[in-house]
Image 1: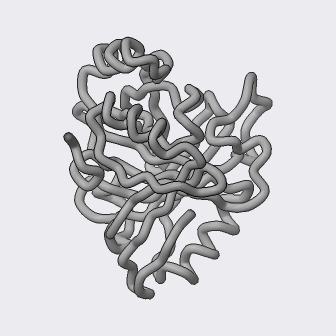
Image 2: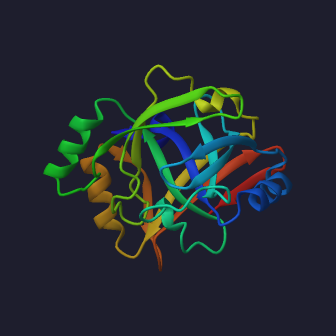
Length: 211
């Protein structure tokens, strides 16, 4: 069983306003997120904070300079009214085989995509990932990413501390645990009134909880 510290690649905070959330998180965490880049396929952009070796926090929101998008943005961004810890992303390899394995257990990870984005310095990051729009139990199941030979984004992001714990809540926690077991993932899931991810971070401003 893979525990979350061993497989966690990054956490995603979905926000209606990336610039405002960068300022808010600078106050809360004591570090200012660096501009990441744009995702033309989604009409989104992001900012990043490093959380240790090959782990980072991504603040993602609608790109005000993007052209009209076709289809929904990921992580509920079209209806998001406040920042929310919306997803966690796990490292993976052989993603096509992983998606097929999940499907045999009744878990829809969606198709596997090749994606890229251009950094402000003009360099290009490329990766493969399972579909973030797939119905992953309201984000409590991760989607999977493989950076291949691309430099990991955490390497160039300002350090904001590290992840102390990651857990989840759900009205039917056992159903989530069974799905996690099928994906060989070990994540604590407790009973709660609504699906939620909870991350505890050690930061320059002390311990911070994200939901």
